[in-house]
Image (cartoon, rainbow, N blue to C red):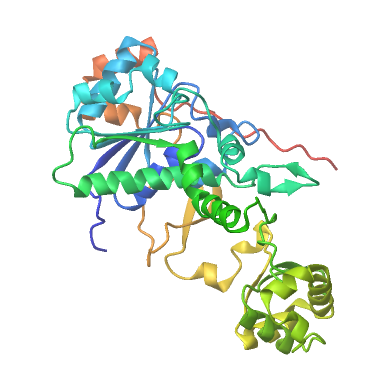
Length: 406
């Protein structure tokens, strides 16, 4: 296998939850060596499932090394500075006050390594809220996404933490573009990515569309719903109790759908145009629901595929990886962790999966890295004894046993 583009680059991660660990996961998949720095309490996601690691650790921390440091101690800070001196990139998503307290700000890190790229994924970038805290659902609330996602009328967060993951992706884009710029200044290498600003960018289309319609119509007009209020675009239940999601965006899609399902509405002049179908939304929805509801999933799939329409079954998580499309070479990574086996989706674009490390335990590589940084055996032992550093311990973050309810 050819060398990956970031082979030889060292990335230091002080990450918790998702945003920074997701960014470094991508950099790791591109070939960088990622060293995950954690406090003695560990990344929060190490204790989320029955007292042990969650899927986040398995999915986004495999192939990384782990060192455990107490950055509230002088010894921990010293080790961290030595580590930063060997790095190309530092990425963290600590709160601004915590970053200053622990000595991991851009000023702190660049004082040790002036050539460093420093990335802080935070709640907000420059502005009056620069020090405020923010989480993924708060970003959804602040940028309009949650207002359009309601359950029983109540604004509700999305399931996945998409804003965290997009912020991590934006961080990677900034890192790579900075690496490609031979004239990048130290200011260019101080990168801040805000969850709030990420949410604004993701909402740009909707915000621009709202402004457009307001100016054209002279009034505010909002179309609620993730299906853009387009009749026939959404999920419908088949006769055998499976949900199918239809992509009916255009007039041509509508014509194909009504013809493929032999619907009475095929060719109805009152429904040929989207603007007319919007006016008759209830009628259209009832017609599509009736047509899909008369078919089993397999029957509907055959008719829709023959018509060249976009659709998919609404897949439950436990069946997602069963599909032949998911099982093609390069798409799933086999991981063994603590005696359990996992199939983890690979970074998109891979055609084969390179062998690498399973998710590390807390401080699994502490001793190895201390030696690499030049600490003698006695010095390393002293740091471990003082609590400035810590190695993996048997039973750390063990999953609580499942009790037999029979």
